[in-house]
Amino acid sequence: MASDSSAAPDPLTVGRYTASSVLVSAVDLQARVRALGEEITADYAGREPLLVGVLKGAFMFMSDLARAIDLPVEFDFMAVSSYGHSTRSSGVVRIVKDLDLDLAGRDVILVEDIIDSGLTLNYLRRSLLARNPASLEVCALLVRENHKVDESILRYEGYRVPSDFLVGYGLDVDEKFRNLPDVRIVKVASDEAPQGSEGEVESAA
Ligand code: IMP
Ligand code: MG
Image 1: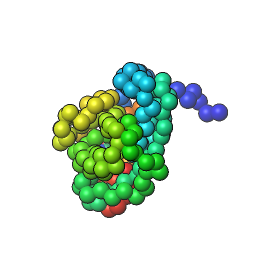
Image 2 (image 1 turned 180 degrees about the vertical axis):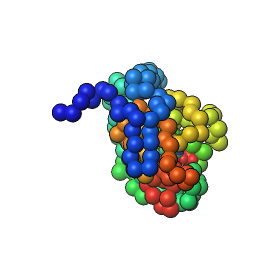
Image 3 (image 1 turned 120 degrees about the horizontal axis):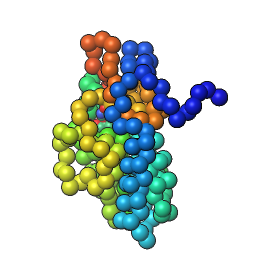
């Protein structure tokens, strides 16, 4: 075995990316996710919510969140691509992996890693609502302070975050750093802006 697995590598550089600045520690994340799980457990008592995770970024959050919910839950996943050349999504979203389960009559919780502009969320909500769930709520680990969605649709959220590009706990830059146990601000060693995996033309979030 390598060194103590609870010690986050710091500073951490992969290629031209450095993720040395911790925004949310692993300990804080675990506590916040447990609290969200408890809130969902209380709100959905007597029901069997269906967690819908948006790949890939939400996989780690969803895994911890599900274990913090003391109810029978089911899982499904979808993967989306957004068109555009910037790190920010264009809002033109394509579903590249759709759900396996029927949402009709289900209490659905859409689990997202980060709501940036909110364009992806708006698209996904429309798509899921069209499938006639009994209810649909959103659970996002991170929400930008300057997001552009209606506050009332953000039922469960972990942290409000500034506009820095973030990695770790499922979030990536060029597919890197998803396995970090904390959320960090990534810096890029050139004048190019960091490219999230969703930032390329038609790549998965
Ligand atoms: P939106 O449509 O602008 O809200 O973009 C949402 C998606 O962009 C998220 O689900 C992430 O996949 C990705 N994203 C936005 N900001 C970041 C970031 O700081 N790090 C990693 N991915 C991000
Ligand atoms: Mg995402």
